Image (cartoon, rainbow, N blue to C red; front, side, top):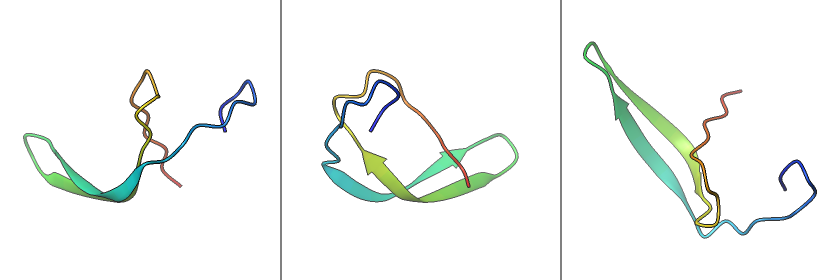
Length: 44
């Protein structure tokens, strides 16, 4: 659910990697929501 109360469908879950010049980060629990207009990262 996003800020205005609209629910969005998650179509896939998985993991991915992000590379920087100094290291590579693995992100697990990544949710794919094709109707999102922006990419978001939430870490907790």
